[in-house]
Image (cartoon, rainbow over all chains, first blue to last red; front, side, top):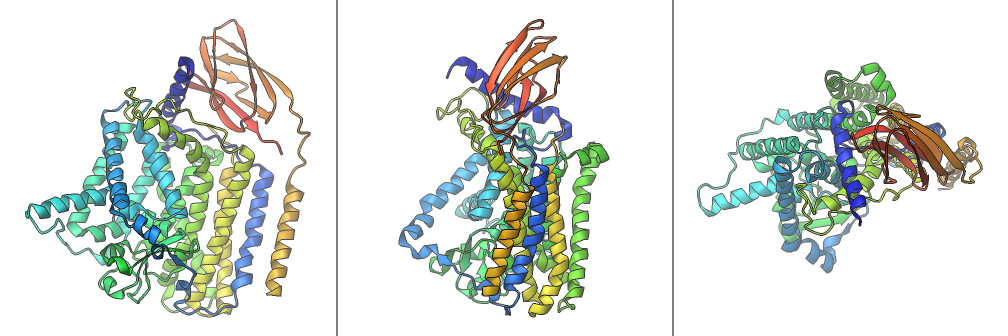
Length: 507
Length: 119
């Protein structure tokens, strides 16, 4: 590559970062988008398809009676039964290697953030916002949840605990303070809201040093939480990313499962400790003997219909995730810019008010649904908690539609950044001059795939809500009636997602 | 079973029909030669958005009142332009999407090149 081309490539990188920095109005942690808004006719078509297809799951599946175990009966295939997969997936080399890599990347990001070049070439913003946040979210939803394995904070905690034990200073790090059960996962809800604020409102979210400082502060808090309340307790209730990736993992086409119910005794993460019901409980999975573990392939999204215990704040977390991804797109619409007049204060209000608005809508429609379905045991709280998971596919579909081109194009930056993580002119792997290729997906394909994804997420959401209602009401007729308000709710959310994608891009 | 099948067929027909009904007739797809006179004054480009179709041959005739490094993102073309000259920049619009046009001298955004897909 000649010197001119190198200069241009480096400047292009620098420029996208400077843009993100220089425009406080568009403060969120992402660089420029290359997508053209979807045309009006396609938006209308998507909206019409959402309305028509909403009735399909109801029409096709409304006659089946469901018992309490029905949600657990889906086809699955245990990958551990194949000796090759078992050897590969359980090898210390792979799992230990991934954990080591994750911690190494964590320290590279922190070091690059602290001492690397602050404007221009630096691995921290791209790794955190593109590779990890967008990339790992997609991986979790469409492949499976790796976070419990690679979460750098648990790895560090385990290592420190191992050292403490070996030196026989103490018997482990956990202080074992009782966690107030009524608090549920509200700490994770709060921390996730702070994260959404950082991503969308905080104008310095792309500055490497801020990323490093935030990461260090969060590390201290997480390690303290794990030590104070116990590792598993804090991961399930307070570690926002464990809760977030756990939620996406319920959508994934893979699951971990523990066969022996005695493993689950005393675990509040599983359903009701009945045999074969410990699904996606990573704490039990890690304690179980190897022959009691399963790693199953399963149909996508079925994990969201399971009758798992929903802790206090569980529904709120789903709403905050949905509102968070929507807010990100909403910020860039002319409507928002004109009405709200972007200032950090109004944006911060938006981060708080949008989840409240979404919650209000959700709770209102759930109550309507409960009334139309003729009530039901457990009251309003049980219904509000149970239906929340059905919204997850809508959030995943919107996030995918909104960011997949971003991951495909900006994500390529990571190839050059790994060779020069600090921006000091290194070329560790010989890839420092790698230039992103912009022509991976054409704008026409992007339009159709965006609309297709959003409508597909919507249909899955309607299907899930319906199977949840069959579980709650145990009567196909009542379940059918109870779904009509929820259909309206889902169509509302979906049309909002499509509408945002159809908005002209404003500066 | 038969009922489900009929339902699926009806829905496919309705949605398929609606798609062809709503989808606009694509304009004659032949690539065109498009020429734009672009003037840049104190970092403001007019027109601020250059909109073309995929496959077009685009010629930009650029005038500026201060020295700039005119750069189109994605296409990665860059031209240094002095005041007083009218620089000519040609490109084949083969990448679709929205690409920012920047001045690499001052690192400011000048405008946007939008290439709409065919069909």
